[in-house]
Each structure stands twice: as structure tokens, then as C-alpha cells.
Length: 178
Image 1 (cartoon, rainbow, N blue to C red):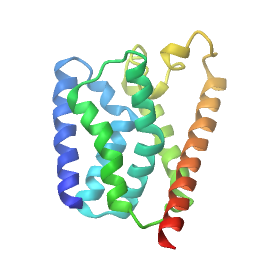
Image 2: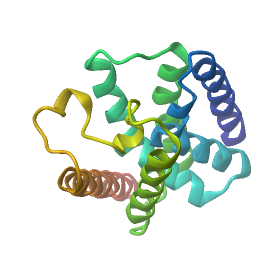
Image 3: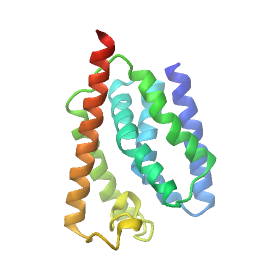
Image 4: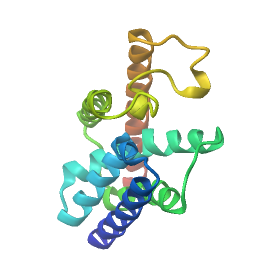
């Protein structure tokens, strides 16, 4: 089941990569959601617990909520992107069911995001604003300042989401175990 789920995610990622490349949007493949979907897919295929749990937490706490906001605000999407964002958290949760998320995982996820911001700044055009590396999210750009204050706020909010999702998951695991 895990391996099949990983292969399914990889196929969706390949389809998405082809679509984005054809549309001139290949730099968007550096979005945290795509990178952590890849981590999760590889983790499922190789049965690598660190990749599975980190991918699960990133997908459930950050990627899916961000995707929903993106689409609700009128952002572009595709069937492959929808299926990837909808199925990655489910497949991760099925693979990790019954296990607790370790305390270090939110910090690892935050470090991955910071690395992706640096890569986005170096490798993507600022017009794409991949991983919010250049400015606040476009619908809020007029309301929030650019620069380090918004980056700090973004990190604090992301860390809060990651810890809250970990707490909820672990609480649910404690409840189902008894």
C-alpha cells in the first residue's frame, strides 16, 4: 500500500512537472508543497520514516491549507495539482497512522522551508514569489510590509501551524490507542 501510494504521488509529480514546464512555470516546482510531496513519495516507496513523517506534517499543516487559500483567492491550478494536494496528506496519514510525530519534526520542516526560501531567492524570478521568498502573499501584499518583519511573522505562523498540527495528530493517536 505504501509503495503504491508513493508511485502514485510520483506519477502526479511527473505530470505536474511536465505541465508546469510546458506553461513556463517550472520554477514553481520549488514550492514547499511540491518538494515535500516528493519527499513523501520517496519515503513511501523506500519506507523511510523520516521522509514520511516530515512530508505528512508539511502537507497537512502547510501545503494543503496554502493550496486551499491559493485556489480560493483565484489562483491557477490543474487536475494533477488538485489530486497531488488532496492525496498527499491522506497517503501520508495512512502510512503514519498509529504513530506519534516526534518533537523535532516541526523544526526540521521549518529548516526545509528556510532552505527552500533561499533556493527560491537564488533560482526563481521574483515575479513568481515562490515560497513567499520576495514579498508577502499577493492578496495581502498591500496590507503587510515586505522584508524581514514579514519573513519573521511568516516563520512564527508556520512554526505555530506545524506545532499545532503535531499536537493534534499526537492527541488523536493517544485517543485512538486507549
